[in-house]
Length: 487
Image (spheres, rainbow, N blue to C red):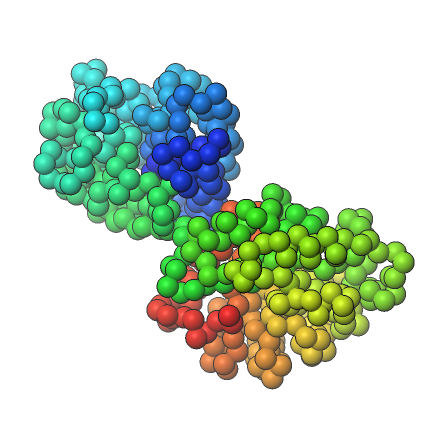
């Protein structure tokens, strides 16, 4: 029997500010980032959150904090279970706001046995109530499938680890787990975590804290008696000196919660060496209705003089206030249907980072587009566009994917050639996008530089380069990749 689990340790979110954990002020963003990575790239059968969701139990805002985290967990695209920890306050209140784990819950042929009433003891320890120890045998009675015990406390054999926290009656509890053939015991509380450890019939695993850099969580794969643990980290490896060249701001009509100072702060927390704010140029010149009507593709900016807004000065002023040289100012400019960049020359000249994007093609607007003609349009526009001063081609070929058409692989080599000849980098971008690995390989082999871009429209996306790094690993690049990247 198989199952895949995502396991999240202590979150310690505090909207009111740092209490015991400095990163608690952004722990809601950490959780949101983890949830989206879990949904898109891990796709588990269930997700377990092992307590201490919030950081302060005497704050008037703790109920609101729990409700905020509940809203994030509700985004999970799999069954999930959250348990209270010693920082979460009253257990009954916790279970009113988050789903009550109940006596046990069966998911995917596995029985999950939660313990939410472990009694707090001095030294941040706990003890298991006799009724809960008896519940282990009750969960096994009449049930032959695998059982996984879940609790907040970092349960482990006494004296076998440096962890200072445990159940005071850990030996008795582990004996009951082993006698009843419980496959795995999952806990949190000890922020460093404890690697998978076998105690007989029962293996134990303590998840590290999400709130502690590098912001880890676990993926647990079970196949029969075999248990494999994969550690994921939300923070990028600082040694790689990664730069996010594609971040949007509150000036984007399509932004969700972007904020320039918070983006810069999160970029540092996530291990980046820098970031570039590259707002949609069209959003600075056009109204929302004009952008929605996609008039920037049909007319040049010069043709629209007198019908445009004047938000560009405010944008540049806001970005210039961000910490330099860590934060750079830039624009993402659309390619109009005549091959020109939709941007004012005076604004483009002010940019340190210049991204070009082909967001639409005339042929793909037709009810029944001709893919070969669309490919020729793409190459024709790109041949002109790469000479406009852009440094990076944003999300190559996404225009085909968004139009629900096949990406023509015959375009890879000519696009690669145009980029190499013009010195323009190819962006790796996973925002509503899946870069073609074959194209990225061809770029690397041809000496075309790559650019990492999150294309962040939500704060959780800033510097989220786990899929970028995984793509390069799949192509054989699993070390110092800095030589491949534009800086």
